[in-house]
Length: 400
Image (cartoon, rainbow, N blue to C red; front, side):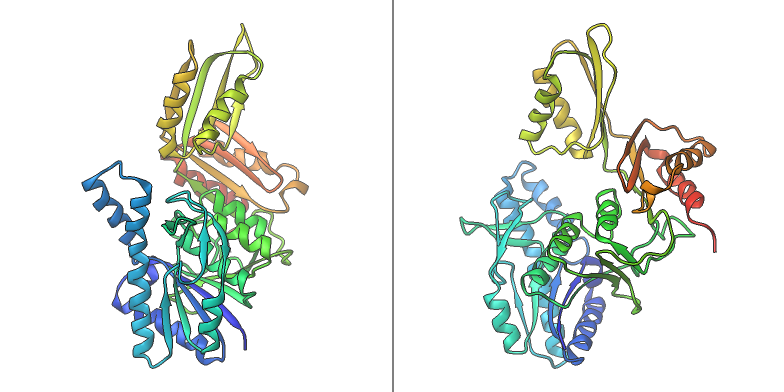
């Protein structure tokens, strides 16, 4: 009937029972007459456990060696799943990332896919094999193993779907689809039937942990239709695609992100080009800056405040202290970013004030604000994040 790419995360294959459950999902799809390629993550907390083992030996290990280690997690998963599918009586073969044709650049632990040579995948499909592929990994021009960073298996699945022009790419998780908020934290969170690439990309970037943002970018670029659904509860999920006909809901989701550090540069000399020097220094060290706020210059000085990932906060301070004299640099890691996302936001006046009203009513202070056509983000104290999400969700998403 068609080619279906299915991706299963670590929780979906966390133990023998769940591996067999995934095997049944895969073989049911195959029995319907489809060709099936399965992309699998490492089991459960395997990646975190491997990182912990490495830190016991050498906390400053070269990233090349970290990739050599971390690729082992997916190798275990694909082998076990292939064995389970074989047990059910179906033809199957497991492939590591390099065997499946994944070529990446040479940025260890954060590699980007350069291309996929799908010859092996096509050959195995032609033999009517179910193909189980290790997500999250590839090989660079030095024939070294590389990993794609957190959420890389999502990107692997979308890349295969794009390269082989699959009919659908299904991302199986431990939730039943994309919700307006985390259903484990917000009682009234609603599952969406459809969502656009742009909205999903914003939600993924702003802290929603359903899909990796790089995978959504790739899906949009190559027109890969995604379906997010549960591996534990078989029912229709959420379709991610372009120009979907949406319900008349202004806000599609409310997210929080606690992986945030707020860096403040105080009493900075107000000289031409200083902002360029600061942010080019950070860029050279691959530190991504999100929200930026600059105060009005006064008495020859100004303040610049910006956000980075929490792990990059101390490094940003260290880099800037080396180049900036006479100013104070402070890093606050006890903050969170709360955001609302919706493609119809720009045509509805008062959206921002409604969000701020919800926070005011909950006595939550706003430290920074960032807006775009389809999202509004605020920086608040981390301890207020869950309350903020619930308050904003109640304000925008009506009770049933």
